[in-house]
Image 1 (tube, rainbow, N blue to C red):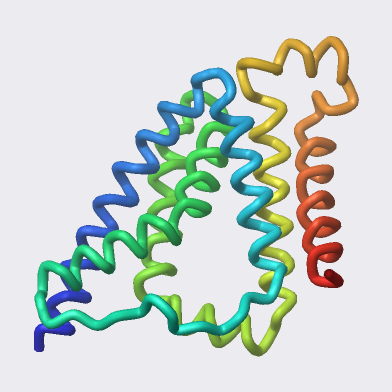
Image 2 (image 1 turned 60 degrees about the horizontal axis):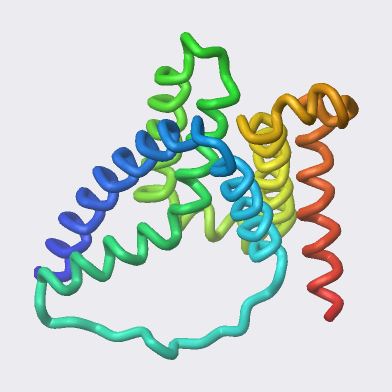
Length: 189
C-alpha cells in the first residue's frame, strides 16, 4: 500500500516540479549564454541516448519510509526530465511570442501523460523499434541547433557573420547531424 501511495504522491509532486521548472526555463532562456548552455546539454543528452549504457543496479536502494520514497521519485524525475524541460521550453521559445504560453502548456500536456502513464508503452516500443531512440536523439539535436542560434549573446553575430546558420532549419539540421555523428563515433569506441 505504501508503494502505491509513494508512486501517487511522487508522481504528483514530479508533475508540479516539471511545470515549475519548465516555466523557469522559459524565463531563463531569455538571458544571454543560457540557450547555448541548454543547446550543449541537449546535444549531450541526445548523444547519451545513442550510446549503449552498461546495466548496473549499483546505487539502487529501496526505502521503507514513505517520504524518503517520494523524495527519491522526485530527485529521479528531476534528473531524468532535464531533456524534456529544456526541449519543451526551447520549443515554446522558438514559437511566435503570442503563442509561447500556449505552446508551453500543450508541450507539457502532451509530455507529462506520456512520462507518467505511457512510459511502459514507450519503453516497449523503443525495444521493438530501436530507431525511435535515434529519432528522439536527432530531435533533441534539432531543437539544440535552433536554440543555439537564437541565444541573445550570439544572435547578431549569426545574422551578420554566419548567415548560413541564420536559417533555423539549417542550424537545426546541423544540431541533429551533430548528435547522430557524435553518437555513432562514441558507439564505435
